[in-house]
Figure 1 (cartoon, one colour):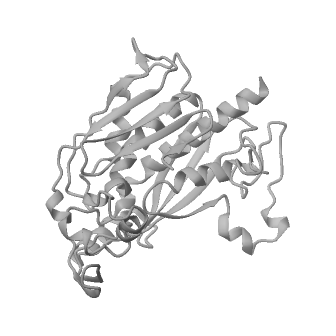
Figure 2: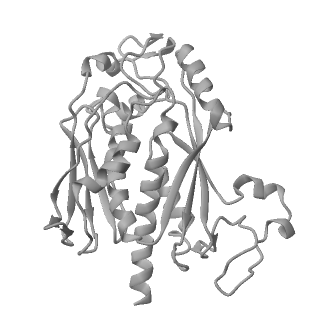
Figure 3: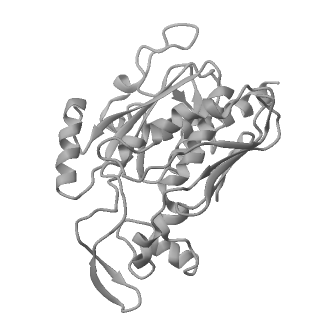
Length: 330
């Protein structure tokens, strides 16, 4: 449900317009230097503020309330909290009766019998990714020496970064939204991480990545293009004793196990469903389809804020696999 991992285990909690959101991490090794200030750089990358992101501004100040003593992790559960300070819940008063197309409003009402917090998407909101980003900073420390970097490669079908701004300006003028493509590269992960079959590197990263709201697809290495290649083209020749390969169509993974080459994967981010263009949806009380104009503050391109979240969940997934692998080898 809201818990992920076998050794490096995290649980996320909170709602978009509730008092707090946060994360509890269990299984974090003791003795890792950690301060609240060290969380801030990645949290700032997730913030809104850039053109095309939501006008909602939150301080996003992390507060570590357990698991750290005298600047080091203790090995006890580590809890990070964030206050919600800039909420406008009245913008969402209609959603109890008019679920937004493309959102979780309707299915949440069915699953939780109408008791769900619908304000700002509640527990389904992208705001919950704050806890994921905080956990990712700590997971990166567990993976000391491994680098994880995600970049936005495409917005609305445009692959030229110089054209991104024009795409965003046009979609904002149209009162609409647009999706994107994010690529993530992991370097210097030890060989041998991954537990086939069900806890392969691809399986665990994908499991974590799909916890990010708006992610609709993932591909590793050559991905879907591999279906168009011959074996002689797709195979990666091993060229030295370290396992380095001449090509990397496998994306750094063979048999579900890290092979020492860069892990490369891409994720598709859907357009934000909350748009200002009038839409139609079912009015639950009347039983009729009616026009809906969504109020509130939303991202025209949420993909702009996704790369750091992808890095975070990748770090969490790999930290867990690394600790499992280390336990096996010991």
